[in-house]
Length: 226
Image (cartoon, rainbow, N blue to C red; front, side, top):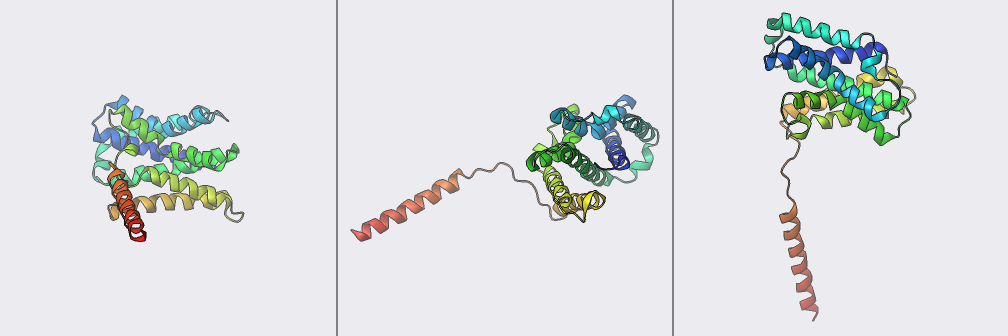
């Protein structure tokens, strides 16, 4: 398992992302607190409900909920500090995804899940809070829309963490840093080169036309043999 301070760091960064969401949508204090709790603890709660193994982190931790509330209060009372950096949200959001991927993948490994389940739990922990955030705001979840890599970053990060944990000399001390680096780098590359996830794909015309061309070639070859 990752150390407690790393779990708490993920919660604080996730709550910070919730503050930026609250500012963007001009929510009241209750909205700020709700967004901080959802962004910081939503993914872990989904993971724990699905896994049904071990404890529920959001309820077990002494500091998780107070940290969310404190972050919300500070962000609500001092909004101008954050408004000076309009591009801060994307960076904070993807860093929180990376940290939650570490937490989710680690807990899945600790509960002896197999590789595909480990990656799934890591991904859900990483993007689950963002999914709930969008649902509560009445939007289509970001992970389901055409955009620069987001959910894919979580998947790759979870795979990277799992792979690092299989190497004896790396282990839990280095794997979190490798995972955060991979997730953030992949996200920044997708933004820099404007690489987006595919949407509205329809391969039927290409497959049908290719099939017709193949059949015509086969028919011509048969005709020549005759």
